[in-house]
Length: 580
Image 1 (cartoon, rainbow, N blue to C red):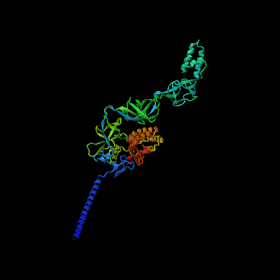
Image 2 (cartoon, helix red, strand yellow):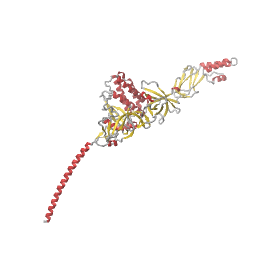
Image 3 (cartoon, rainbow, N blue to C red):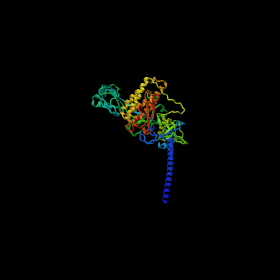
Image 4 (tube, one colour):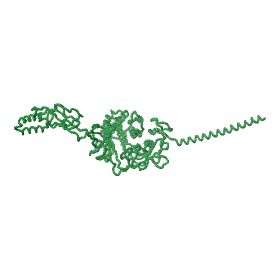
């Protein structure tokens, strides 16, 4: 009986336990399902796109690495809907983009402005001399035979058979026999020899040897280096005829090409410092002593000249140089000081991003500025900035790329829905003759770009020469007035860059010129779109020590002309141009 009672109680306890367990399991499963659904909904509401700070065209719904450069992806930024100049960033995106800011400072004191110009070395024309023959005769022997030969004053340069001088010697010998009876005759014969520029030793030798000297040595009147030989062995010379052109190279002219807008900042006495690829690691100095009074109508530049000491002989005429001119800022210019790393620029336009104060979400505002000069690691600027505002000193390119992708105002996405109307003049239905040369010019530009991708510097000069011919022959006279003015403005600057590309044979110097050429070509394409073609504006953020540089391409695939095989695929598409 007791056993039966115990067995019955065990069955009841087991049934109660199973029922409680079922209720507990069922309730926990439902709660967990509801909780998971709630978490999924909350996650979806906070879903973040991930992008690459170097290649912001990459967009993924989850973290990972960039398929182009293999950098870690970061959360993409958002836009402030009420102001297209402002971009918002989450705190996580801000941290991952490694954004740093610094305070805008006032530039105090008489700070100098620095202009960067290109130019060349030339012979100082004031040191050019011509060696002439003092008497008529036939060249029997030449002692100075080739261009570049150094000549010192008093050196023998030629031996000349001079009939006139032989006759004067004969008269002197005859007068010498009658010297005691007719001293006046002797004096006249001596004077004639001297008038014919006879060597000083000749009268004494005639008196001693009583014998004619048929071939007379012609002595140099000047020091210098032979620039041009004007006679050959056996030539018959007239009295006063030039034999050689000599130049002193202990002092040279450095000539820099300045644009018209640079002229207000250049004065007689301004200091020039310059470097040349042929003398690496050395900086040379000069002082501006001449500014050409006329503008070159072809290049729209003015030559600025100074004299440089060359006693070391390191510098050679026609060397290509990169120079800087320092001058004082104009009175009344109130300059601000910001780090160079804070400035993004394309062509003449310079951009910074300012961190807005007192906002819940980190926000950065696009501002355009003017660069007045340089001071160490800082730029001196003016424009829409205030002292004590904070500008982005590191990470500005990441912010700008995010702004462009979000249709915010950026370097290449200018004047978006800001309530202003700043329409760019775009010219379609171009005259056929003009369009033909315009298309050929772009084709030549793309050939130069491809050569730089391959680092094939040797072929660039010929392609640049052909591009220059298309640029100069373009039938711009058929354009209307507004289009013609825009074309001429960019044409003059493009001509100078192409001329420098023809002159330099070193690939890194060519890449520097190509950046300037690209800036001008991008401006022209903005105004003169190509019919039936798509051109991409591509950007390498790491070119020129992370300053960044642009170029045009027909192919959407990146082929970097600034690094070539070293970083062939580094870059992004910043803008697309088509006929529409």
